[in-house]
Image (cartoon, rainbow, N blue to C red; front, side, top):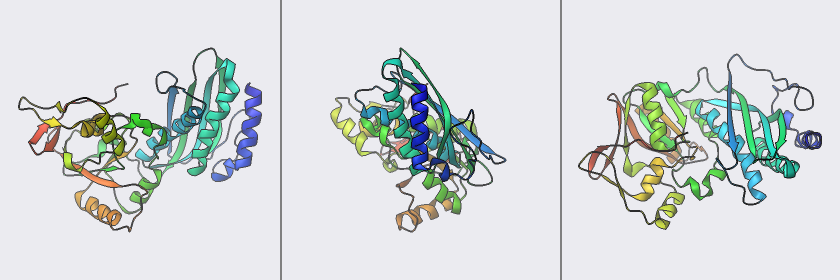
Length: 326
C-alpha cells in the first residue's frame, strides 16, 4: 500500500505544483527527507486525530473532512501565534483492509486546504494496522512580525476581541471552519496585538489559559458574545433549561450562550489589544475598509484582578470554568 500511495501522492503534488507555492522548499516529496529553508525563528506545531476519539467515519466523504481538519487545526494554531504556515508533514496510520482508499481520501482533503493557504506538503509517513484511522500533521512556518503572539502578553485594560461566531461545533461546524490566517495577517499589518490564542477548548477555558499565563483576569459582556446559528439551533433542539452559574445569588445563562461559552472546536481567534487600537480596528472592519473574511467582535476586557466574570442583566458574576479538557 505504501509504495502505491507514495507514487500517487508524488504525482498528485506535482500536478498541483505544491512545492511552487512555497519558494523556501528546495526539495519536497520523493527522497528520504524534505529540505526547507527555515528562518531564524521557525514556528512549528503538530496535531493528532484518532478515529473514535476525535471523529467517527460514517461514510467515505468523512475521510476528506478528516484530512482537511487535520491541517486546519494546525493552521489555526499558526494564526494564533502570528505566523504564516508554509510547509506540512502528514503521517497516516490506516486500516489494513482499506488503507489506500483512506490514505488517498484523507490526503485529498488536506491538499485542497493546503492549496487554498499556499502550504506545501513536503513529506510524512504511512503505516497500516487492524485498528482505526490515525492522522498526524505537523506544520512549519515563519512569523508575520518580529515577535510571536503569546498567551502571556495580556495587560489590564486590554480589550478582548474574537473572530467569527462561537458555539455549536457539534453541528458539523468542526469540519468546515476556516483558519483565521488571513485575518491575523491583515490585523498585524496595522495593529499591535498583546496576546492571542485560538478557541479549541471553549471560550471560557481558553480565556482562562490566557488569564493564567498573563496573571490577569477578564470580564465577558454576555450581550456582545457572537453566538453562532449552530449554537442557537442546538439550543432549540435541546430540552435543557438555562443553567445556573456563579455565586449563591445565581445567574441564568441561556442554552445558546452556554454553548458559545463552553463548546470546543470553534477555532476562532481570541485577541487582547489596547482599547484605542481595538476601537480603530473595529471601525475599519465595520465600515468595510478592512475585509478580514470574518466578523470581529469586542466581547470583554482584561482586568488586573484575577478571575473570570460575566456581565448580564443581573449584574457581574463569576464564571465557572468549563469546556473541553484533554
